[in-house]
Length: 431
Image 1 (cartoon, rainbow, N blue to C red):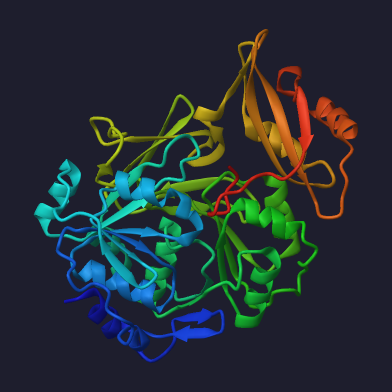
Image 2 (image 1 turned 120 degrees about the horizontal axis):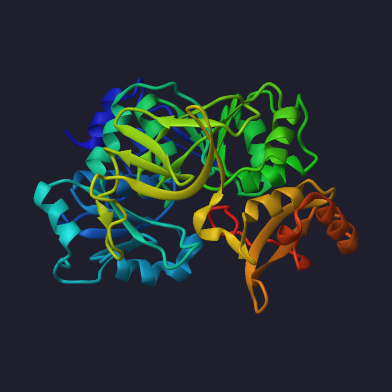
């Protein structure tokens, strides 16, 4: 049975819109009327699909799964990386702006791609954010990826904050389609637009990033009565700080808040949050194991990726994946404190950037912060800090420096502090 037909059978009413926003609505019945861009796509073709959560994009995505293609979802937001992605992912075909372009006459020979083709399964090809190097091409068996949605879950009206090329965005889409929920396409991914969309469309679930929640907390828009429909906020993709979490919890007391944990390499993981205003979590679910070695979190998951197309396998002989996330433990509970690959070594003493950033965020007027290590001829490295001020606020650098001196040990104090805009990628993560 085709994926599209299966979704129609699961739907209580294929005419009922599952996608709202930007002045449009979309139902499963509407998708059947969208242009078919997949004629001529062969099983096993790697197809770069430049799209969004709209009728052409969703129709093409579902049709490519049914055609047993290997789908590489991309968005126009990162168009400067498209050529890199086409090459690293061995794209045979590109679908963009309603046009189908074949890049190669024959499918590229690549071990993992060929193994997937031999199974006759559709594939999913995602890219890491590339924050620590070139983006990695991450290959999944799409049919295994979709299997988790066969179990019915609660249906929500969800804001589609996460993007078409992100595993979290795809999770939002398929959870909605399989469970008769609704997705609202944001008018724009700005604080004001998202706030208005939640209010106007009665959004119940907001999946987002800590960076966006920091901006929302500092916006002045929130109070206990501001968003009566909102029931749940989930956050992930980067580390959350306690100050922001506490602020959101206080501003929206009626909203449950849950941390998510997932990596494109490992698929979607089930996470339990100890309390809505705490950072302690448990990671598990069917087919998922976790352990901590040398303060770093390792995970073994049945629905993991098949591998990287452009990098060595990160799994050990027993199938464990070192996430490189550093954690503290409290019995079976975990709290992420930083990344092992971002530790700053100052004269032999280790500094976690998050320690410096979280302290800076507790200073009045600071909305975003980023700490990094810079080479130093005397100490090997030293800490530098970039802070972004709240709108309309001026931060006195010397006052901030004095505050940090009172809160941080000497080796963690920034040698240089700058006030400016903290850069963010198209996925609303700090760069």
